[in-house]
Length: 468
Image (cartoon, rainbow, N blue to C red; front, side):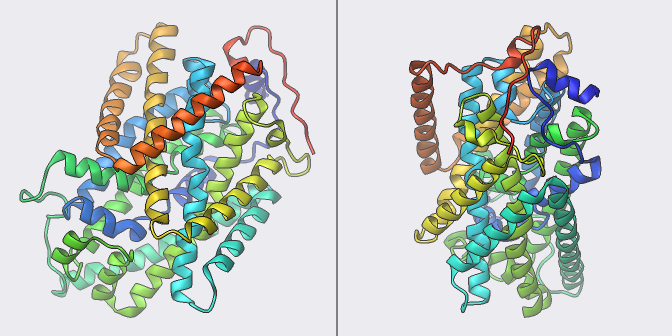
């Protein structure tokens, strides 16, 4: 009842089913992040960091620990779906919330399309007889059906998939460790620090790529209205997932870096085919290990990872739509399944169309990755500002450590990463933000000025959201 009262206080009804426990949130976050995610982008991060791939992931963990802390502060203040959209809207102002939601849409809407594309191209390379478009269609169809059934079904499927990913990772770590102990590869700490190539700008640029592997821990905040334990569980789960995944990312990239067959070539030519990690796996254990890692990565990105990404995207669309900042049909909730059904279906359709289009571009994966990372980091910057404005300025908090120092450090680290990010991503990301400003101006002109009930909770008027 208390959790339902929290929503009512902000003018909303409890429409989504509270069925998720702490372990479900951790599993969701790990699946979204994918414990074996670095396998797919290892070569890009290695080349971008001058070989210091483990350092790039370590810095990424440190940077995002501050972001996770800011999420925990804001989800306690506003325990509802919508993530940065809600936190900025209620913590700063409704127009800022709209723009924050618009920016993070660049992340959430594009992520499923990227995941489906990477997985489909990998599976096509493994089974050439099946075209990319058919793999895409299959992945999208399976995930949309599972997510439409209900959040419990999603949680059950993702837990099973997570076990499979962890088994594959354990096999790689064991075989790679044995290979190094047997004299294959070369033991070195260069993956953490190489005095010949180290510069902070180089590492920051590589971290801006590695961030792609970390995206997902923030998606846990989208489940605030479907969690049994309330906002405290959300914060705990985000911290646990970030640290667990970070340790796994650092361990596997360090081992792979010591097994890369031609380091100089990888540094100079990059990894255009995305096979650098699998080449290292082949050095460690032979073709069977390379194939196991490649297929596991494809399935992980195409099914469980994109499945939970679709969940997060649909919740963001639902949250913005019930506030009349996106079309109202996206706020429809299935009365039998307790899921935002139209938002779920639209996410599937957009992901399919986007994936099919990007499959025709030579730079499709690179372009999507850069845009997603840029959108996420900008949204995280707004999150840190929201903590300071809401808690320190508006609420008069005396906790300077939690509400100024921590978000301030997180903001500074992320700002440095954004400045050193891919130039094309910066331009396209700023263009997307400019388009959001145009849409915001259109809302004002049409009389639909952004307004959030959480800004005036004294006289709650429960919003009516159509259910189907």
